[in-house]
Image (cartoon, rainbow, N blue to C red; front, top):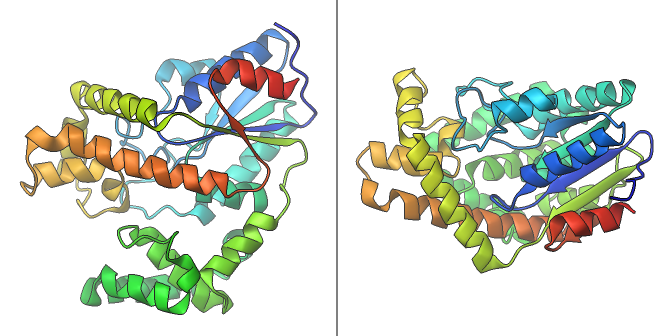
Length: 316
């Protein structure tokens, strides 16, 4: 294998839809760089792996992988917490600074596009935000959602910013809340705030942002296989254990893809016979949203199979 040449410091992002093979590709790159004398550390950019106790449904890196290379931003929040993109940036920024101080390569791996954008480009929100005012607005909006319903709040987002109709979905409660919160804080449409963020340069010099692109039917087959494997490994039991430990079913992480379907099954709202197919369908819908997000980001280099050969070619 030819020598992989990376700048000092380096940030390599491996992103893409769920189940496309991001983690496996990143581990292969880390091992190749290790053979060439470059140390690598991982920063996990995923909105579910940050939570303790959510392991199978989050497809966390294995214990062996975590032992082989240092991983950051795993198990940093309690399941009862409402972890946000701002929280992610607050923890991930010093992690990357520390990685570079140790002379290592930062491998940022994940599929949560909003986290990646906030970390790599910054936004009008997050680290520059008046957190006290933001918390007060969030509390008010959550109270409205409890009394008026999320559908009313979603309609308000679209009324205030028609440009968000394609990006803020009615069942994405976090994004509905965040859009209303940001618009009240900054007095600008949510779509405009996102446009400004997309146009910003990368925060870290030497950043390479790769996104894995895969045939839709091939990806769906991979998702179906992973859904079956998660359930066979005990995903339903993991969710029951979290609820037994006092995590409310409506907690933010238990409303994420894979976990919500298990909650619906355990509550009796849906049949266990359809659980695997429902997780597959929800994950496929999420994958479509992820692909749309990454295609709209500037500076993203799309990788087609064979991912490894094309990554080596892109890295020179």
